[in-house]
Image (tube, rainbow, N blue to C red; front, side, top):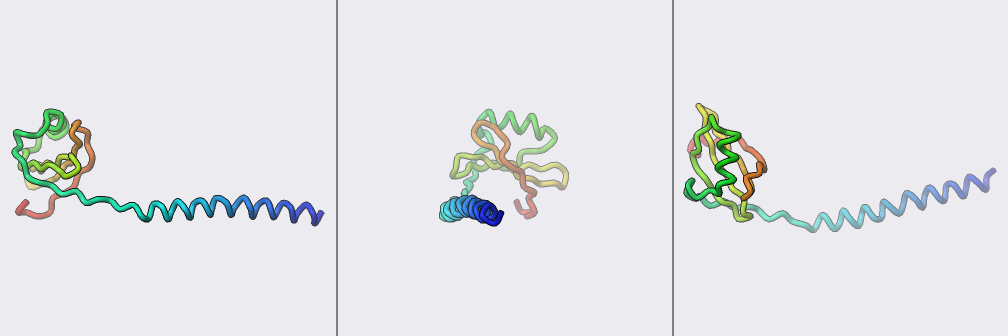
Length: 108
């Protein structure tokens, strides 16, 4: 009975150590990947892609489009206002929603 327990323990230890080793290698690999910061340049609202303007009119019809920006990654940032609320909505060139942020700076 002791012999069976020793073999089982060895199998469990070996089984647990292999994935841990693989996970450590993957973690190290992911740690070296750096995300490039996206910078935005203001653009004319009229030059937004049609897909982006359609997404804005479909999803944010009750907002006023204040400013538009194109990102260094090809994305678009649009600043929208409604009453006292100011938001920045991000889209890709196909008009797909990426994210939304509340704009805190009253000068923006």
